[in-house]
Structure formats: structure tokens, C-alpha cells
Amino acid sequence: MGKRLPFLLLLLCSGLFCFGQNKAEYEQYIRTANDLKFKDWPKAEFNIQKARKSVPESNLGDFYIEAAKIYSDANYFDIALDYSARAYHIFLDKDDGKTAKIDAIFAYTYSQLNDTKRAIVYYKKLLSFYQKQKKQAETIKALNNLGNAYLVLSKMDSSRYYFEKGLMSFENYDDPVLKAFVFSNFGKFNFQEGNIVKAESYLLEARDILKNNNIDDKKSNYQVNYNLANFYTAIQNPQNALLYAKNLGNYVIPNAVSFDNTNYLKTLYKAYQLNKEYQLSAETFKKYDSIRDLLNIEEKAVNVERLKVKHDYELQKRLDKIEQDKKNMLYVVMVIILLLVLVICILLLINFRNKTEKLRLEKKLIENREKELEIDNQMKEKMLVYKSMEQSKIEEIFKSLLEQVNVLKSKLKDSEIDEVSRIINEIKLNTKQDSWGDFEYHFLNIHESFYENLDRRHPGLTNYDKRLAAMLKLKLSTKEISNLLNVTPKTIENSRTRLRKKMDLTNTKEDLAQYLNEL
Image (cartoon, rainbow, N blue to C red; front, side, top):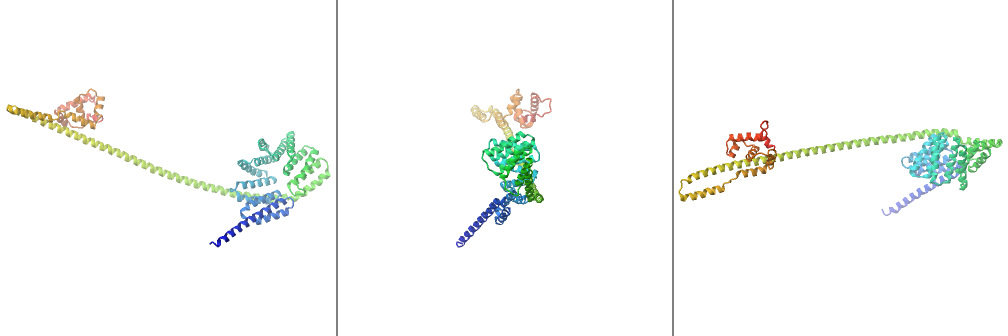
């Protein structure tokens, strides 16, 4: 393993070196092609093909973008669209920055091919991207391009909207080149609206911005002079029309097969014609016509249309797939949500059942406790009655014994009477005199608030009435009560009748024992 490690490191370094060399080689070919695109197109295209062969697979998308730009600049719009479409499929939904670059190529290419509506779609996508990225210069360019596009379609309100938004941006942003572009195009807009004075003011302002800032940028100077030449041609100002038409020649490549060159020659021959220099006008038109033929617009237009259809089909197919994926994802999300809802419902049901069972058990426990308490109270009541009856019997026995001892006492001698008297006193001392007090003490331990409730409802009752009520609450029979009170059952019945009357229950069907039990 130790011997193999240096070999593996050497192999890895060789791979990285080759990769870097391939990338540098492909980039050099692209740079050369870009330099030659207006000077020697066959050599430029040769370098593009060499770059294609040497480009690493990881940089293939970038190669398509760079090649598409070169082909678009050289007016090979069909190939530019083909390369752009290939790059689009590589970077779509993966790299927004690269996708924006491709959108820019699409927008420029379609605007050059007079497919303005399609160009607007891509300009708007660019505007949205640049606004999100807060790239002010690019945002102003996108606004300017949209203003121009809507102007081509004669949608003046939309054109004004985008131009004015672009102009407002210069309140806090300074870029003379960009400002000249926007002012020049806004001048063109005002001319189409019929405001000649305002149009000329903006066009000359754009010219002065470039002049005062010594800007030698070919693209901006070309655009400003082109708009001025066409403006003065339209208002029949021969001298200025020819001046700015000739100025255009300083910013185009002579004899280049390009739209910029054809636009220059077309503007120049119209200016010569306006100045009645018909010979020069005819010669210029001949050059214009020959370059236009070389551009081969008709054949390229067919190829472009074919590529449009292909690109639209592939893009729509991609969008359909994305839409289907969204639907599938939606279905998955819905299924997951339904499962979650089902799980939640099951958990809620289980929780509800557990709570119900818990409540049932708690209720049963309370009932059992109440039953236990009731049984305990009943046992205490029975014990109380039992003790009371036992005490009553004992008192009767002692009373009978005392009576018998007293009878015997009268028959005894004087010497024995004192001893008997002592025994009688001892019996009296050991006999509870207040057995009823004990009864009430134990009774109140079981029914502590009974007498309070009874006094509150019926304040005029006697102690006898209260004792009778207590025994009736204990559900004692008439016989049991009579035994405890040492009276006849008839007496108890009469006492019950008097108690009902005192409680205002005489004319009711309510049971006296039940009524007392609820107190």
C-alpha cells in the first residue's frame, strides 16, 4: 500500500493537470473566436469547433452559452438559438444566474428577428431576476429593452411605463453610457408619440452625455447616432440626417455582414437621397443590398422557426414534466396529510377512550367510596342503636334491681340497712345517668349537621321532638323507639303525628323518615 500511494498521487495530479489544461485550452479557443467574430468569421467558427472538442464535460453548459453569444453577435441566430436551448436544459432549475444569461441571449436574438412578443417574455424574466438580485445597471437595461420592445409593438402606454421607470433610476444611480442609451430611446419614443420638440431634446441630451464624458463606447455611440439620423431623416432635415448617418460609420466594422452594418447603410442611403445626392444613394443602397443578401435572412428565418418549434416543444415537455412532478408531489403530500389526519384521529379516539375509561373508573371509585361510606355509616348507626338498646336494657335491669333492693331494705335490721344503702349508692354511681347524651354524641359523629339543619328549618322543636327525629332518621321501628324511650308504641305513634304537624307535613304524602333522611 505504501508503494502504491505515490503512484496514486501522481495519477491524481496528472488528472487535475489535464483537466486544468483542457479548461484553459477551451477558454483560449473561445476568446480567440470572440476576437475574430467580426474580422474573420471562418476562423472564428473554427475556434468554436476546437473549443467544443476540448471543453471538459463539467463546462459544457458554459461553452454553449459563450458559443451562443458569439453566434448571436455574428447574426447566426439559428445556431445561437440551438446552443442556447442546449444550455437551457443543462441549467434550468439548477443555476438561476446561468439561466438569466441564456434568457438574455434569447431576448436579444428574438428582438433581432422581429419576434418582439417572444423577446418581451425573456426581457420580463430578466427584469424579475435582476430586481431580486438588486443589480441596478442590469435592471435599467431590462427596463430600457422592454420600453423599446413595446414601442415596436406600438403599445405606447406600456413603453412609456418602462422608459419612465428607467429614467427614474438615475435619480440615485449614475452611469453615463446607460443614461445616454435610455435618453436616446426615450427621445425615439417621444417622436413616435408626435412630440418632436421633446424628442429632439432627449436625443441631443443623449449625444451630449457621451460627448461631455468622452465616452468612446461603440455600442452607445452607434445607438445615439442611429436614432438622431433617423429622427432628422423623418423630419426632413437633410444636413443633420447626413451628419449623423455618416457618424454611424465610425462605429461599425466596414463590410461586416451584420445587422448593424445593414442598418447603417440603409440610414446612409436614405440621408443621401434626402440631400439629393442620388449617385451616392444608389451606390450605398447596392452595398446595403449585397450585405442583406449575404445575411441570408430568409433561410435563417426558416431555420430559426424550426428551432423555435423544437425549443418550445422541449420546453413545454419539460414544463409538463415539472407540472406532473408537482401533481405527483401534491398527491404524495395529500396522502401523507390524510395518513397524519388518520393517525391523529386514532390517537384522539384512543385518548378519548382512555379519558372515558378513566372517568368511568373514577366514577366507579367514587360510587364505591360512597357505598363504603354509606355501609360504614349504616354499621355505625346499627352499632349506635345496638348500644343504645343495650344501655336501655341495662338501665332497666338496674332500675329493677334497685326497686327490689329497696323492698328488701325495709325488711332488714337497722345494722344491715347501712350496708344495703351503701350497695344501692354504689349501684347508682356506676350506672350511667345520661345514656341519651351518649346516644347524641355518637349520632352527631355520623350525622354532624343534622340538628343544625333541623333547627334551621324547624326552630320550634323540643328536645323530645329532636330525639324522635334522630331515631326516625336511623330508620328505627316504632317498637324499637318505644323500647329506647321506655314508652308505649301508641305514644310513639302520637308523637310522630305531632312531629309531622310541627313540620307542616300533615297534608302531604311525604314520608316523615325519608324527609328527615334528606336533612
